[in-house]
Image (cartoon, rainbow, N blue to C red; front, top):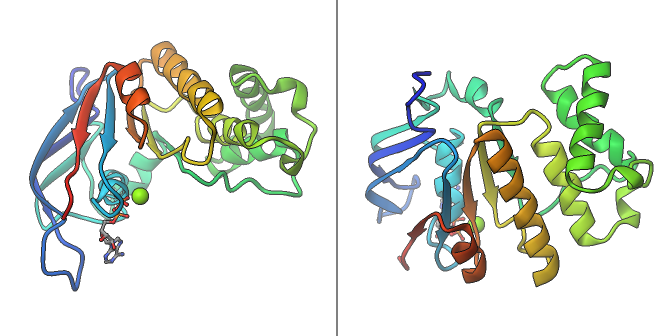
Length: 218
Ligand SMILES: Nc1ncnc2c1ncn2[C@@H]1O[C@H](COP(=O)(O)OP(=O)(O)O)[C@@H](O)[C@H]1O
Ligand SMILES: [Mg+2]
Protein backbone atom coordinates (compact mmCIF):
# COMPACT_ATOMS: atom_id res chain seq x y z
CA UNK A 1 0.00 0.00 0.00
CA UNK A 2 1.37 3.42 -0.94
CA UNK A 3 2.09 5.34 2.27
CA UNK A 4 -0.32 8.16 1.47
CA UNK A 5 -3.07 6.00 -0.04
CA UNK A 6 -6.46 6.59 1.59
CA UNK A 7 -7.68 3.82 3.92
CA UNK A 8 -11.05 3.87 2.20
CA UNK A 9 -12.02 5.26 -1.16
CA UNK A 10 -15.40 5.02 -2.82
CA UNK A 11 -15.67 6.36 -6.32
CA UNK A 12 -19.10 6.95 -7.82
CA UNK A 13 -20.46 3.78 -6.32
CA UNK A 14 -23.88 2.57 -7.31
CA UNK A 15 -25.27 -0.42 -5.50
CA UNK A 16 -28.53 -2.31 -5.83
CA UNK A 17 -29.51 -5.52 -4.07
CA UNK A 18 -30.53 -8.33 -6.38
CA UNK A 19 -34.27 -8.21 -6.89
CA UNK A 20 -34.59 -4.55 -5.80
CA UNK A 21 -35.58 -1.94 -8.31
CA UNK A 22 -34.08 1.16 -6.77
CA UNK A 23 -30.38 1.51 -6.06
CA UNK A 24 -29.48 1.84 -2.40
CA UNK A 25 -26.56 4.10 -3.35
CA UNK A 26 -26.12 6.12 -6.50
CA UNK A 27 -22.85 7.85 -7.40
CA UNK A 28 -21.59 7.70 -3.82
CA UNK A 29 -18.01 8.91 -3.32
CA UNK A 30 -16.04 9.22 -0.12
CA UNK A 31 -12.52 9.08 1.19
CA UNK A 32 -11.03 8.30 4.58
CA UNK A 33 -7.38 8.97 5.38
CA UNK A 34 -5.24 7.44 8.11
CA UNK A 35 -6.25 8.60 11.56
CA UNK A 36 -9.58 9.97 10.34
CA UNK A 37 -13.00 9.31 11.76
CA UNK A 38 -16.14 8.95 9.64
CA UNK A 39 -19.57 8.77 11.24
CA UNK A 40 -22.45 7.35 9.23
CA UNK A 41 -25.99 8.13 10.31
CA UNK A 42 -29.38 7.71 8.71
CA UNK A 43 -32.78 6.15 9.34
CA UNK A 44 -33.28 2.42 9.61
CA UNK A 45 -33.06 0.85 6.16
CA UNK A 46 -31.03 3.69 4.64
CA UNK A 47 -28.10 1.38 3.88
CA UNK A 48 -25.64 1.98 6.73
CA UNK A 49 -24.93 -1.71 7.27
CA UNK A 50 -24.84 -2.35 3.52
CA UNK A 51 -22.19 0.34 3.10
CA UNK A 52 -19.98 -1.32 5.72
CA UNK A 53 -20.60 -4.68 4.03
CA UNK A 54 -19.26 -3.19 0.79
CA UNK A 55 -16.11 -2.11 2.61
CA UNK A 56 -15.37 -5.65 3.78
CA UNK A 57 -16.39 -7.26 0.53
CA UNK A 58 -19.59 -9.03 1.56
CA UNK A 59 -21.39 -7.27 -1.30
CA UNK A 60 -20.09 -5.53 -4.41
CA UNK A 61 -21.16 -2.40 -6.29
CA UNK A 62 -22.82 -2.50 -9.67
CA UNK A 63 -20.82 0.52 -10.81
CA UNK A 64 -17.89 2.44 -9.42
CA UNK A 65 -15.03 1.22 -7.31
CA UNK A 66 -14.41 0.47 -3.65
CA UNK A 67 -10.77 0.58 -2.57
CA UNK A 68 -9.63 -0.29 0.92
CA UNK A 69 -6.01 0.10 2.06
CA UNK A 70 -5.14 0.98 -1.52
CA UNK A 71 -6.57 -2.26 -2.94
CA UNK A 72 -9.78 -2.72 -4.92
CA UNK A 73 -12.12 -4.88 -2.85
CA UNK A 74 -13.00 -7.99 -4.84
CA UNK A 75 -13.77 -11.63 -4.21
CA UNK A 76 -10.09 -12.48 -4.03
CA UNK A 77 -8.67 -9.54 -2.07
CA UNK A 78 -11.40 -9.36 0.57
CA UNK A 79 -10.01 -12.04 2.89
CA UNK A 80 -6.57 -10.46 3.07
CA UNK A 81 -8.15 -7.03 3.55
CA UNK A 82 -10.43 -8.27 6.32
CA UNK A 83 -7.41 -9.39 8.33
CA UNK A 84 -6.38 -5.75 8.48
CA UNK A 85 -9.77 -4.58 9.67
CA UNK A 86 -11.37 -4.63 13.08
CA UNK A 87 -15.07 -5.38 12.74
CA UNK A 88 -17.28 -4.41 15.67
CA UNK A 89 -21.01 -5.08 15.71
CA UNK A 90 -23.96 -4.17 17.89
CA UNK A 91 -24.39 -7.66 19.31
CA UNK A 92 -21.36 -8.83 21.21
CA UNK A 93 -21.44 -12.50 20.11
CA UNK A 94 -19.20 -13.61 22.95
CA UNK A 95 -18.78 -17.33 23.56
CA UNK A 96 -20.60 -18.01 26.85
CA UNK A 97 -18.53 -21.01 27.98
CA UNK A 98 -15.20 -19.33 27.45
CA UNK A 99 -13.69 -16.89 29.91
CA UNK A 100 -13.25 -13.23 29.03
CA UNK A 101 -9.56 -13.83 28.26
CA UNK A 102 -10.33 -16.92 26.13
CA UNK A 103 -12.88 -14.90 24.18
CA UNK A 104 -10.25 -12.31 23.30
CA UNK A 105 -7.63 -14.97 22.54
CA UNK A 106 -10.18 -16.42 20.12
CA UNK A 107 -9.81 -13.26 18.01
CA UNK A 108 -6.13 -14.11 17.60
CA UNK A 109 -6.74 -17.80 16.92
CA UNK A 110 -8.81 -16.77 13.90
CA UNK A 111 -5.73 -14.91 12.67
CA UNK A 112 -3.59 -18.01 13.20
CA UNK A 113 -1.31 -16.51 15.84
CA UNK A 114 0.76 -18.81 18.05
CA UNK A 115 -0.81 -19.26 21.53
CA UNK A 116 1.81 -17.33 23.45
CA UNK A 117 1.58 -14.23 21.30
CA UNK A 118 -2.22 -14.52 21.26
CA UNK A 119 -2.37 -14.55 25.06
CA UNK A 120 0.08 -11.71 25.44
CA UNK A 121 -1.83 -9.47 23.04
CA UNK A 122 -5.18 -10.48 24.53
CA UNK A 123 -4.04 -9.39 27.99
CA UNK A 124 -2.69 -6.16 26.57
CA UNK A 125 -5.97 -5.40 24.84
CA UNK A 126 -8.03 -6.28 27.93
CA UNK A 127 -5.90 -3.80 29.85
CA UNK A 128 -6.63 -1.21 27.12
CA UNK A 129 -10.38 -1.60 27.67
CA UNK A 130 -9.95 -1.68 31.46
CA UNK A 131 -11.02 -5.28 31.95
CA UNK A 132 -7.86 -7.18 32.81
CA UNK A 133 -9.07 -7.75 36.40
CA UNK A 134 -12.14 -9.57 35.00
CA UNK A 135 -10.23 -11.85 32.63
CA UNK A 136 -11.26 -15.12 34.29
CA UNK A 137 -14.97 -14.30 34.44
CA UNK A 138 -17.58 -15.64 31.99
CA UNK A 139 -19.23 -13.07 29.68
CA UNK A 140 -22.65 -13.80 31.21
CA UNK A 141 -21.52 -12.33 34.53
CA UNK A 142 -20.58 -8.96 32.97
CA UNK A 143 -22.68 -5.88 32.29
CA UNK A 144 -23.62 -4.98 28.71
CA UNK A 145 -21.01 -2.24 28.60
CA UNK A 146 -18.32 -4.60 29.85
CA UNK A 147 -19.34 -7.23 27.31
CA UNK A 148 -19.02 -4.75 24.47
CA UNK A 149 -15.57 -3.80 25.75
CA UNK A 150 -14.60 -7.48 25.59
CA UNK A 151 -15.96 -7.52 22.03
CA UNK A 152 -13.83 -4.48 21.28
CA UNK A 153 -10.71 -6.11 22.72
CA UNK A 154 -11.33 -9.21 20.61
CA UNK A 155 -12.06 -7.32 17.38
CA UNK A 156 -9.04 -5.04 17.79
CA UNK A 157 -6.48 -7.52 19.09
CA UNK A 158 -4.32 -7.01 15.98
CA UNK A 159 -4.19 -3.20 16.06
CA UNK A 160 -6.03 -2.96 12.75
CA UNK A 161 -5.33 0.09 10.56
CA UNK A 162 -9.06 0.24 9.72
CA UNK A 163 -11.87 -0.13 12.25
CA UNK A 164 -15.45 -0.64 11.05
CA UNK A 165 -18.12 -0.45 13.73
CA UNK A 166 -21.85 -0.98 13.13
CA UNK A 167 -23.84 0.64 15.95
CA UNK A 168 -21.45 -0.74 18.58
CA UNK A 169 -23.14 1.30 21.28
CA UNK A 170 -26.70 0.56 20.14
CA UNK A 171 -27.43 -1.71 23.10
CA UNK A 172 -25.82 0.52 25.71
CA UNK A 173 -26.98 3.32 27.96
CA UNK A 174 -25.44 6.75 27.29
CA UNK A 175 -22.69 6.45 29.93
CA UNK A 176 -21.51 3.07 28.64
CA UNK A 177 -21.87 4.24 25.05
CA UNK A 178 -19.64 7.19 25.81
CA UNK A 179 -17.12 4.90 27.49
CA UNK A 180 -16.92 2.53 24.49
CA UNK A 181 -16.65 5.53 22.18
CA UNK A 182 -13.77 6.98 24.19
CA UNK A 183 -11.87 3.70 24.11
CA UNK A 184 -12.31 3.53 20.33
CA UNK A 185 -11.11 7.09 20.05
CA UNK A 186 -8.05 6.50 22.18
CA UNK A 187 -7.00 3.38 20.26
CA UNK A 188 -7.49 5.18 16.96
CA UNK A 189 -5.21 7.97 18.20
CA UNK A 190 -2.58 5.54 19.46
CA UNK A 191 -2.48 3.45 16.28
CA UNK A 192 -3.34 6.10 13.70
CA UNK A 193 -6.15 3.87 12.46
CA UNK A 194 -9.14 5.05 10.48
CA UNK A 195 -12.60 4.55 11.95
CA UNK A 196 -15.93 4.18 10.20
CA UNK A 197 -18.68 4.29 12.81
CA UNK A 198 -22.37 3.74 12.17
CA UNK A 199 -24.29 5.39 14.97
CA UNK A 200 -27.64 6.89 15.90
CA UNK A 201 -26.06 9.19 18.43
CA UNK A 202 -25.78 12.84 17.42
CA UNK A 203 -23.56 13.34 20.46
CA UNK A 204 -21.02 10.79 19.21
CA UNK A 205 -20.97 12.43 15.79
CA UNK A 206 -20.18 15.77 17.38
CA UNK A 207 -17.61 14.46 19.82
CA UNK A 208 -15.72 12.70 17.04
CA UNK A 209 -15.24 15.98 15.14
CA UNK A 210 -14.75 13.85 12.05
CA UNK A 211 -16.45 13.46 8.70
CA UNK A 212 -20.16 12.83 8.71
CA UNK A 213 -22.14 11.00 6.05
CA UNK A 214 -25.87 11.08 6.44
CA UNK A 215 -27.72 8.54 4.36
CA UNK A 216 -31.21 9.48 3.35
CA UNK A 217 -34.57 7.84 3.37
CA UNK A 218 -35.20 5.70 0.32
N1 LIG B 1 -29.42 -9.22 1.47
C1 LIG B 1 -30.33 -8.29 1.12
N2 LIG B 1 -31.10 -8.47 -0.01
C2 LIG B 1 -32.01 -7.54 -0.36
N3 LIG B 1 -32.23 -6.39 0.32
C3 LIG B 1 -31.51 -6.17 1.43
C4 LIG B 1 -30.52 -7.11 1.89
N4 LIG B 1 -29.96 -6.61 3.01
C5 LIG B 1 -30.55 -5.42 3.25
N5 LIG B 1 -31.50 -5.16 2.29
C6 LIG B 1 -32.31 -3.95 2.21
O1 LIG B 1 -31.48 -2.84 1.96
C7 LIG B 1 -31.92 -1.71 2.69
C8 LIG B 1 -30.80 -1.20 3.58
O2 LIG B 1 -30.52 -2.13 4.63
P1 LIG B 1 -29.37 -1.90 5.68
O3 LIG B 1 -28.11 -1.64 4.96
O4 LIG B 1 -29.40 -3.02 6.65
O5 LIG B 1 -29.87 -0.54 6.36
P2 LIG B 1 -29.50 0.10 7.78
O6 LIG B 1 -28.28 -0.58 8.32
O7 LIG B 1 -29.30 1.55 7.50
O8 LIG B 1 -30.70 -0.10 8.65
C9 LIG B 1 -33.15 -2.15 3.45
O9 LIG B 1 -34.28 -1.79 2.70
C10 LIG B 1 -33.01 -3.65 3.50
O10 LIG B 1 -34.27 -4.27 3.56
MG1 LIG C 1 -27.91 -1.59 10.12
